[in-house]
Length: 482
Image (tube, rainbow, N blue to C red):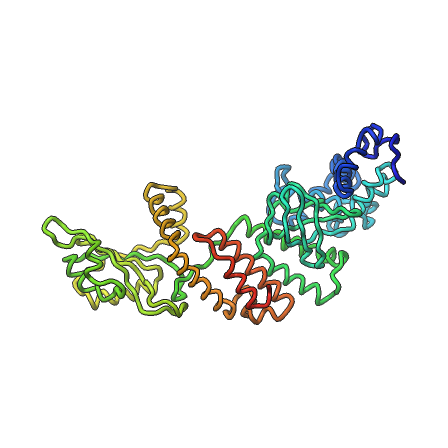
């Protein structure tokens, strides 16, 4: 029934409709007005429902529900836990006590959630709009959503990863944080033309997590199709398990295994020698440098007061590259001579063994002293403690100037374009050993490849210089994803 101008406003202000929400309703779209009405009508509802749930199920129910939600993980309930933003709605609208392991009295173990029991007792006292909202919260399960588009401060376009449903959600706060490609674990409810997030996880997940979700979706589809809200509820424990695993990975990132261009695990080595003469050592090891002549290298060297060579550094190189056909050579390490000390720096155990063998043959008088091995983790930790220094600022300035040169950018772009053209035919663990070209032949594979490209695009935008978006566009075209 339409509200009359002189009727009491349905928002509960106590004022006449014409003096309250009529002007607002006339000044904005119907959906925006309905969204504001929903927000007003549910303002104090969570607190009231929590009090009801504790009275209904008993004082120990919230702790029992917390343990079920956390799936027995070692996290004690705390009013300051960031999990409360998702736990409380789950407790009110989704949790049911386990008949075999509950302290809840049998009389209230009737298969109704706290929200459903609340409506059964109080619906006649509530605003009809609030009743519809609670009904939707009870009927709609949590699910995982791809962020398709973002309008900061206004809303987010989402796609349910399991059901495929696309929906625009009116949401102010989350829309300021989310980026296209993010994944959110949320309960999204719809009333008439308005959809909003009743609850969402405190963390947005990276696109790389899509693989685990697709695996769960495949498991569901083997048993039941189509994937409805009822099916999603049947897999709520699996949904929560993934949520906890993804949250742990987000909060405890593992440093990826990094390999050099010979596909060897990166492990920095510094091999220390004592030598008899800087010039003798330089002349003996000069053949290890393929790109510079002795004259070029000596131009940047340092000499003592008598004009004898004192310090110099030059690369150890080999011809070609196993991974990149376009490379003329590969730098394997750096040889640094300083007086009677010589340090050779390489980035893998195998290269350390190789250079020791070469020095033994080419400079047999060099006396090996020690090898210093530094893990990448400790290097990063030390770098973080040292912070920015004048030397690091100068190095970054020089690097930025180098990267800004058009010829350097063109060379990097050429290399990246060649790399990603080959990438489409490389077997990838994220695709279960398939190449992107093979994976796109199936619906799930196409989705995973699209996600990988989105992840590459996002990380590439943060690199220096940024990855040219046209390169990934070309890959999408090559794979039939454009």
